Image 1 (tube, rainbow, N blue to C red):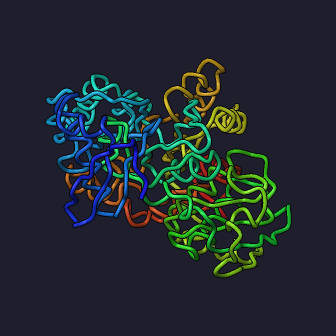
Image 2: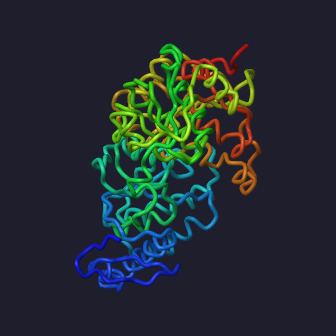
Image 3: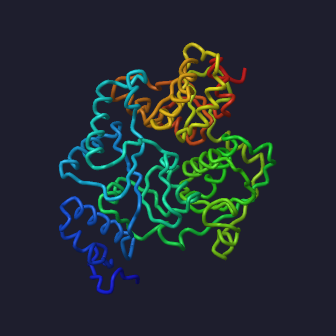
Length: 437
């Protein structure tokens, strides 16, 4: 059992096991650094001992679960916690909210909900949490070193950090905020090397022309994730050099299954070869993937084949500047059909860059909207939220999107029909108000 420090004291566990703590951790637990730190490290100890963790790890970064007003009690819990004056001890970004803080009226957000959501901004600033409000913090320069320990929420961020960057994190939840305060996380799950080895091998036998777009990689993620669930797939045969493809595939792996780590030999951080990916072991199973599997993946989440469209969503996960430029050029000199809404979701820092370049203005001149801080399935458009605030349910009838992650969630959370089509066809649907006819 590892010991941090020559005389690290033994701490009794609530589960009948034991965890070793360093002198510093014992002091923090006793309250020498204040109540918020003591409480935070106590939560980490309890959490770790529940999963037989033997020690706590020093983390270098946290992606924080920003409190969304669509969840009952979430904002209230933050306000109560903020009264203790906690401060984050490591760089800490924040995940999405239920609305764009600047454009909530134009989005149709009820004022009562908007006022409640805006309450989180002040305590976040006071705690030191950075108001990024995005699912893609790595696009803003938050790139922890390979093999560093971090604590992250948001499934598409977790899988990117683990796989592409080789930072080590579990899929965090509400306790992640305590990691931000004490700078610790239990040594368990994907913080252990033995849990990071591949489990299933997928040989990708899809011709290059059928694996070129953001949507194609989303379809691959849907297929593989639905097979492996929460295990660690190894994908052999992918040669993309586009970051957006990898981001989209990871997001759908994390939602069609609950994948938090995958390996692509020669591309991802921890596997130069297939043997590296499996730590020298053999895969549990091997699968061949062809274009038929991609077509079937689309059928899993697309609920209709065509017809009228009233909402088009791009930017799940949040778009980068290059993707915004691509949409702007597709829309230049054109107008979105009457009765259709087009949202292109990104973070506020990227939107500022898009405004400086003129791309955001081009999208808005066509009738679209560049939305920050949120996305439809985490907004007032959720069926449960609509019912609470007297909004129509479903809030929209048909959504067209290129995002497998969004399409996977829409039917259950918003209740509308879904068209999963590529970016070019999403734009066509927005311009015509229809698709496939």
